[in-house]
Length: 462
Ligand code: CO
Image 1 (cartoon, rainbow, N blue to C red):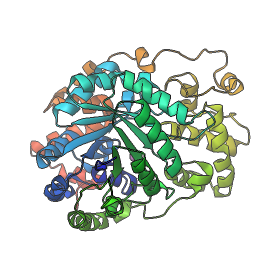
Image 2 (cartoon, rainbow, N blue to C red):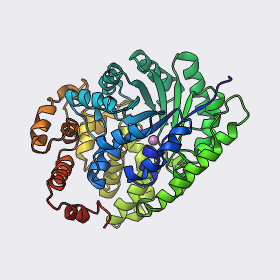
Image 3 (spheres, protein in one colour):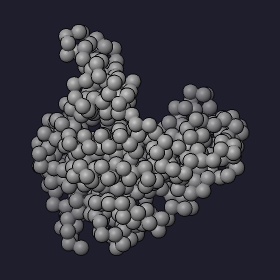
Image 4 (spheres, rainbow, N blue to C red):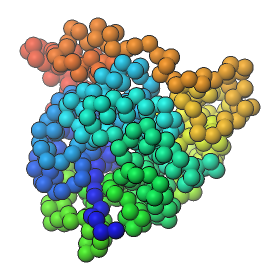
């Protein structure tokens, strides 16, 4: 095929979310906007995922204001966000009225492409967000979360993508959040998707295991339309593969990206400097080949480290790593991505530390087995289910069908501080965190010294 491979740059979302705990401030994004906007990327991923929560919780920034500032600074390039289906940018299901309003306003405030996923690949949890985004005029990119298990083969993913295509997806993203896809599976999966669906295909890999650049090359050979990269100074490790290496690899080939390495180099220089100022949050540049053995994302392993050392039980780490695949099998092989990675990880730790499996059960595991996160990809172990929820029947409807509307209550809570309609949504998603933010913003604007509060939280530089 003779067409350029297109690149989505993730530096302003997944790049710093993966490497700098999502802490990059808007003020560090805007100075490089002109160059990034001129670089010729297919799109820039700039919003969603953990950025919304982090803006409000840690940075004292309004995420909506960030979005508008970025939109203004990037007049040429398409902007995209990552949306966790019915979980939006949070960690639980939100009612339909909140989903509708959130997606509509995300598009209104400047996003062109909405990438929608569900941790369990339960398409019912994606349907409403996809429909609203499409009606609002956005490009709907529906996502297949890639994982490895006895039930997850290429046929399974192609079938899932076909379902999403039938639901009106404008393109398909294969999301390899743990860096598990091998170059040859990437080739096979992309070739099948291109042959069987009439949609653009995009591949999103993390570098965690060291295979992602090879996977991109093979995917390019198989006809993938777009791949996600980060600028080199915020790439590698648990982030995306670097753009520059791929650009150079494809120069002079039928899939030449046409991107200018010197311009990318200037952008990389800028972010190298920025990264240095976030050293306290930086995860560094380690590869984690444990992923290849345990199929456990790097983020989970570092969580185990801190959880087990708090319990003085770091010596149990090998047992916990061995327990994770067993819990995952018991639960019907969920992909390990927020929030299922937390559910499986916490339960594996409990199973090992108590010495008896499922003697103690987290409330999240219980909710999962009741069907409250959606339909598990495979069969749940009936003995485990009985042990945890007894004779109770799991729900079979879409979880959000059981939720009462949430906007009105959020509006009531936000009312004393309301400056824009979007404030209602911030409160609907993260009630405590957003109200605290809105109170401090109001105090700052009415002249009360809220700088002090900011300094106490470590929000503003001293
Ligand atoms: Co990612």
